[in-house]
Amino acid sequence: MPTYTLEEIRQAQVTASQLSLYGSHEFCLTPAEKLQRICNGIGPSWMPDVARNILDARFLLLKVIAMIHDTQYYFGTGTDADFHNANHNLYDNACIIAKANYGWYSPVRYMVMWDGWKMYKACDDLGRSAYKAAIAERERDEARESESK
Image 1 (cartoon, rainbow, N blue to C red):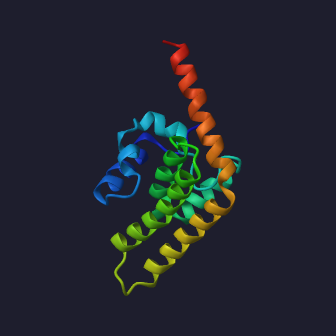
Image 2: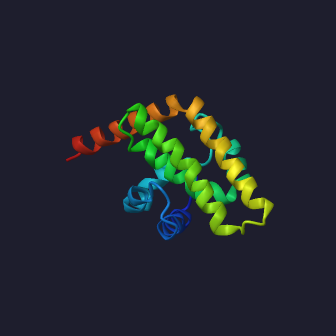
């Protein structure tokens, strides 16, 4: 069962485009049906669905940046620079989302930015295997697609 509905993904694409989030170009060009397979929610794919659903609910505002991050991992090149860039984009996008939704005077703005930094740090320190797994998944998908032609 997909984590996100097609409508949620399409709305995330609109948000990503409107805010010019880092990595939004490829995310917005990818069909929503394909993104349903790529985007697994906040947290690594090895986590149970229920745990990722809880994280999605807790970090509701950050779901769009997690979708972009999943997309960047999936379409990754496998290099260290690409891996770190995807993770940095996660934090930068969290700051953009926070600033777009809360004024400078709102403590929630800084809480969202802090949450984004924690996600960035967790991904950058512990996400290498998830990054490699996403690339491997893409390569399997591409092999299946070429076999079916």
